[in-house]
Image (cartoon, rainbow, N blue to C red; front, side, top):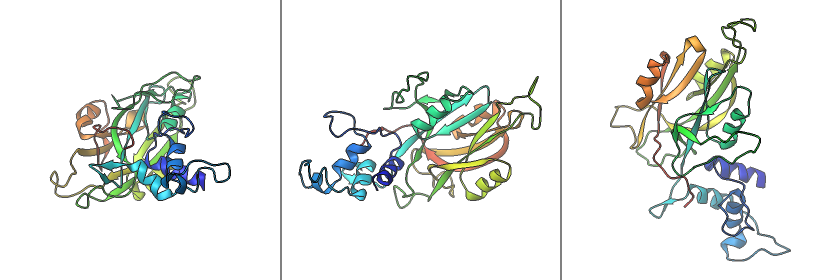
Length: 275
């Protein structure tokens, strides 16, 4: 049950560290949130040898992670979609978790952080075996399916898929054949995800939520968000997701095929802490 609750808490805020409730003044982490949401903690009672910290309350714990704005509990929060690029794999890849990014960093294809610095989140938890990489992202995702405001468009899950194959397709490793070629991509509908699976992609997991496309634009687009596109560079067997503000630059770099307007997404303009 505690493992399941930890997963719920991390789905609400993927950047939380494990934490330690016995260390005073330490950064708030998953275990701190669980302890602060027990029946004993909520009643102002301390840890004991017989009852420990008490029985956790999942609803209180997750609500605490979402936090408050202007004294009002909110049903959602945002987290950066970390972006990385590998010249060896000719691939843009994405992850809303630091562990996901570090897994890319640990691969033999040398993914490096790409995008803008993340306000309020200055460094990944560092693995001494890996080179230090600054957290960088080009957009944020929402972490729950609940709309922040009733008037906003519905939220839709974002799905992560990946395919590895020699490029050009079917080539034999050697001169001109890239046997490290890979493509991580994002899909915002089940139909699109199934289409990519039929093309040989493997489905990994849901990576947060974005606002569904709406009409009429631009009046229906929530404040602080903008269009998200997915386009592909056929010469490198790679698809990339990018905001409207980056569209001209990405198209100039060759990402022009298979145009899809995935929805709208939170801009990089929010703090990262728990209220």
